Image (cartoon, rainbow, N blue to C red; front, side):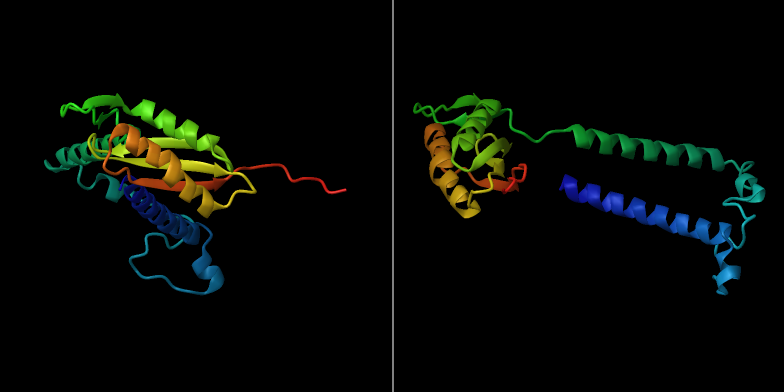
Length: 198
């Protein structure tokens, strides 16, 4: 969700900046006259000496009672939105603890980092995996695993995923007493130098 919001926000900001840049470019280079086309009458720039806001536009509301409260409120909303977005980037959704079946009906708490470390080390030990990373997300009683795997050049992705599900994830499910441990695996190629053939 956060990635989608980031992409939409960046796309909107990019479109606004692109439109503003194109309008400034057309006006400052006087492309209308050079290339012989006309722009709508509402176009903000018609020549190289035009400005974005004229002196009249900048000062016409200054003496109205509503002007400064609206400006301050708009800037405050922008500041709060920017602060919320910044905090959302730093917030992590990783599980700090997961509930495991202790056999007594009560359950026990296991540190999420410990299970992530086990998943990472066992994944890296598998043939064909150069490096691995693991994160637990979801709820404490129903966690989900996110794995990132760097595959060696000789590895077959389908075999690696099947083996990890039947060995690494199955051991984690059994040892923690989870009914299920859904997992999402992202596969990446391990960078390596090209071999010189003589």
